Length: 289
Image (spheres, rainbow, N blue to C red):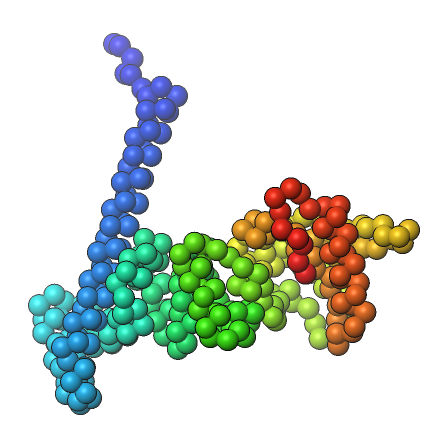
């Protein structure tokens, strides 16, 4: 009896498996785009034809009645609550052009988290950062609940300037330090007690480096701890040195506990000058702290 032929070292199997996985992803993405477009269109239709009549009670009755009719026709998934999600979706993203740039990276579950953010600037910030940094829904939810936008420097800028910076992020994927760095950072995951030393903080960060990098944001890479620098014959050590791929620059972190003192600023400026002179590669921007 002849031996049954088998795929050569799995190459045939691997190729076909890849085809199947690619097709599954494409179908999933197509379904997501189609459903997101449908939900936006439903929200638009209800907004324009019902709620803009400025009769709140009439609008509530129509949404409730519509929910009942759709549920009777199509089954679950068309509750009054769901329809109100769609209404709010259109309200927060009234331009289909903006939605169409997002729906290949963001699922409906992403949009559902973002549309309940009140500030227009924050909505744009979370949508674009989610797209660029490829946050899953759980990460997005955590970023919103920890008030990430409010902790970035861009939230403190005049609205006109903030809009310009977010527009650059939207159109050119241009990340700036004001979009990346936060104040304060949330480090509860380190599990430190009420009283601890700077060396304890450093050790805790290194022990949970993956969590710390997630809190910093996408694009950070750990370079070195206790970075030694000899400046004018004196020996200095920087606690932590990182690199940000999108910003293309080194990021220095010197850990301090307690009230900020003026000497900290002077010392960090000294470190940054050293790093720019001796550690910065061609094509990189100056280091930041």
